[in-house]
Length: 430
Image 1 (cartoon, rainbow, N blue to C red):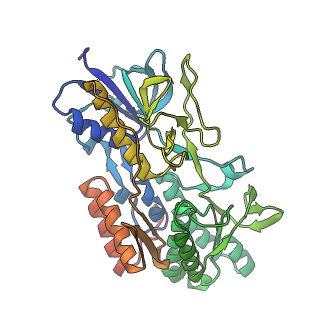
Image 2: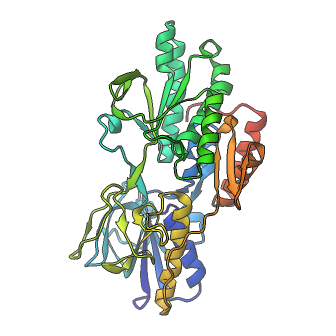
Image 3: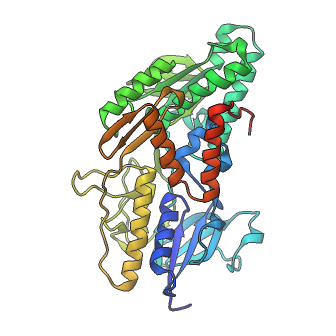
């Protein structure tokens, strides 16, 4: 094995997993490389669906797939641990193993350094609070599956708390849910949350009917700004018809345990849900040659082939990569479909490099846009055709079932959606 290329993939989200599957397709049976994956979790989470877990539309297991059930034919080792640093000059990754990891270490002999010849950085992103005082302490993020579970429990607990009170003003304050950020995640969560409240929670707590309020605070002047304004306008109309309040140019200045400050206004609430943005995950990277970062997003600037200019054996994909559009000269957004395509290109380029072939550059062809607001509606653009209502809802669900990894997860997701069409969704705490 000493003459094989040692490929190490850090992260098993969209970018890391699709980099591996592409490498598996390209190198299977060639015996030219060993592939090691390092992940802090031993399962893949279909992150675009976590807002539906938070709203009880899907159960947590419906959007997860065990990493140990992906094709293992080309995996030399799956390391369940946390990456704490990378030394680019020594070509080693420092790993901190989890305390409960003793039984699943695979041929690693308890070492805390993992050597590589080719490295893929795909550790994703983390919530960006933009320095807002109190946001990290008191806001509820929606970035991970644990966040979604915590948020669902929080919503149910607020209804239980309001149910014990007699003062309607206090009830309204407790049942005021404020979502910071009017991007795709924020508006989808708002739509699903309104449906959860109107259908299941008001049925379970009839005396609280009409007391709950869902508010979106958007710092700009439009919703879902990265797509055609047609979508933003239709989404706004649908949410307002469903009872959601949308406030534009709303600058959050602080978050307190029982309130959110918008400029000089103090709005009582115990439920601030942060959907205001993300930044590339922070990682201690050392090396004699200094890397170029984007200051705002913390993303590493890479070549169109997705490797670091200073170290051409280190590739970056997904939310950690700052790669600019060759036409517009602006970075591609931090979204799952871009991470998927970048991961696939990294896999192909590593295989092409091993074979001595020229590498490809990252080019993006828009594949469309889909968004669902629960009962408030759905919108999609497919092959340039704009859809809304039931057709868009069908496209939304069909697309995500097809994109979900693993037959078991596809079946669970479809089953949950079918049952929720005819039966109340699960509103028990997780």
